[in-house]
Length: 244
Image (cartoon, rainbow, N blue to C red; front, top):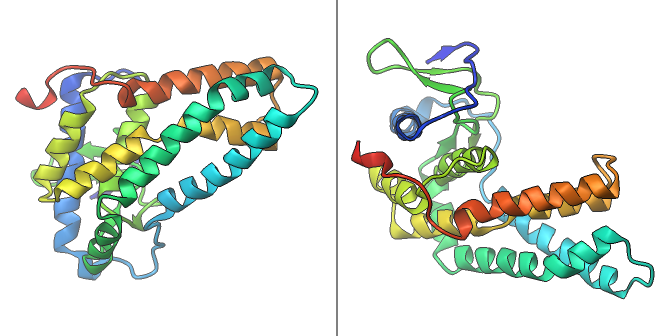
C-alpha cells in the first residue's frame, strides 16, 4: 500500500465502478489476512450509523409534530409537513428492516473477526497499483473497526451524490458473495441504502441552521436531497457491471 495523493475523477463509467468495487473487495481480503497486525488504537464505528439514524428519527419525529402545530408556518414548514411523514416512514422501515435481519449477529461477527473499514473507498483514496498484487491508498485517516459492509455503503453513497446510475441490488449481491458474507449482509445494505439519509440530513441542518442559508436555498437543498435519496431506493437503474 502506497500512501500518496490520488486525483479524484468526476466522471466515472460502469467498468470503472466495477473495478473500484473489486478494489474494495481486494482491500478487505488483504486486510483480513493481517488483522492481528492492525494498529490497536484505531477507533471503532461499529453500529454508529444505525444508532445515529435512530436518534435522528426520534429528533425529527418530534420536530415534525411541533412544526405541524405552529401557527405561523413558512415555506420550509409547509414543505416538511408535506414530505416529512413519508421520509420518517421510510427511515423507520429501513431501520426495522436492518434490525429484523440478524443485525446483532452481524455486529458480533464484525467484532469477533476484528473487521476494519477504510472509510473512504472511492477512486480519490483507493486505486489499483502498477505493482502486481498491490493497491494504492491515499490516506488511512478514516480507518476504523466496523462491519465490512460499510465500505460498500460508503461507496454507494458517493455514487448516489454524483447522480450516477447503478444496479444497486446487483452490486450488493456481487460484493457480499465475493466476501463470503450472508444473506443478512445483503439485507443490511439494502436497509441502509433505503434510508433517506440525504433528506433527513438537510432537515437536521435546517433545524440547527448549520449552513446559514435562506429558506429558498434550504428548499432547493431539500428537493435535491430527495432526488438523491430516490435514485437507488425507488428502483434499480443502470447497466450490467459484472458481466464485463
